[in-house]
Amino acid sequence: MVRIIFLLIFLPISLASKSEELNNQEKLFFSFIDLNNDKNISLDEVNQSIRIIFQLIDENRDGILNEEEIIELKNILESLS
Image: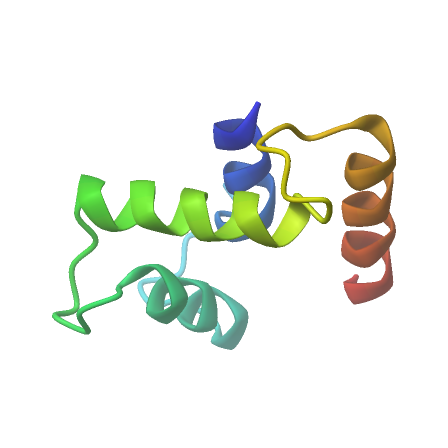
């Protein structure tokens, strides 16, 4: 579930786009995930980013995402688009 959320939030790269460069939003996502700023994203960085996102979504800090927390995430994502 968390990996799905991660993909929905941080990898909204259009498959229809044939651009050779990342757009500004994609660059922002990339830099968020590239924690050590080495211009590469490792599996460790992806896992760390997922943990950070999970902690941000898990408002009551119980280690579980409930329906209300997912709805809140959905509302935030909708407001950004």
